[in-house]
Image 1 (tube, one colour):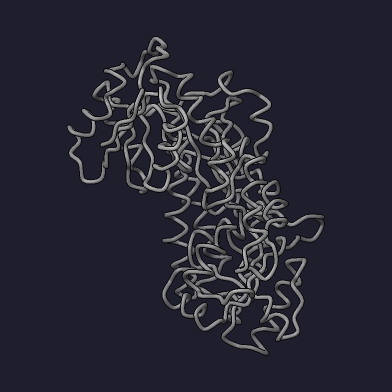
Image 2 (tube, helix red, strand yellow):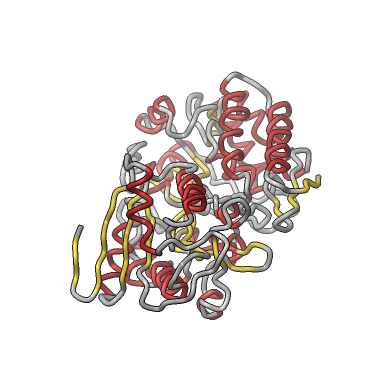
Length: 439
């Protein structure tokens, strides 16, 4: 615990704490009913829950705003944690966080039975909102209201080993058909090398989201489109099944030790994956040598003029409807996501465009890369498919893909059989979450 002149930040690690202790520490908002909005108090302290990576960001806010009263709780980055604690706080009638850093559970936190998230409408200036990547604003909008500001974007790009591509005489594919053809050539001429992977949920977003496959296409907070038989899904099946069969696309999780071994043996020729993968997969894990890795735009599908991205990650900051100091909470969220000095130092691509521009300056001069990847990052940031939304069954999307599709792929199952089963599971999960499902 540390103190600063004019304000206080209490850093509390919630991992392993008893429920009673957690509720006591986070009840700084003061016993507010789950059914009643608190009276706004501009002097009330703000309770912030964040994972260890984001804790320094909140501490930076305190340094820049010494009069702010902040209680900072470090929480584990694990699925379901925030929902469980909010539900317990609802039962106790106290103990809610005022601000949280979270992922795809925003829609769950906004809806019953949690009803925790509050709209930021009117608390963030429109010109600030307009400066965020357009897809991030769309993700944060539920039923016409803005419920979050996005911290970072994990747009997919086509990573490739420039040195190997030149050595083998290959050209970086601009279309998915060229990608498939190159995979067949690699399987024939350089067996053991790969141009992709499909064995974990990150690749669901890389391939199926980027294609626009409607699996989380929320039309409203009550209706969602799920259809694994749509052409945007089946074209991915038809693209990847021959590549799985010839071995040019791996059946493994991209962080499976056996796949990592392909990296350390420099057998990953290409890998469509998140923008963060250069710094957090190729460099430390796959050990791709300096000066070899480059990023290209995502390939295009027939009939489309640009290559769209998926999003493998990316977190948001959201505010509680129980916050005693809602404007203070909104101001904190705004600063965390838009302060250029702060965001330019973050490990991943900022959602706020002016901050992203400053962040990219560091990439332009990074000797690790064969060429500056930032122009590709910038272009793909606004090309994330917009028909994938935050939904109340987001956890099922990940868990069911891993258990049904990824495991089935590893057992030599066919995508044409696995994806419809996956769609059935999502449909049931969506119905259980209160959605009407349309094909």
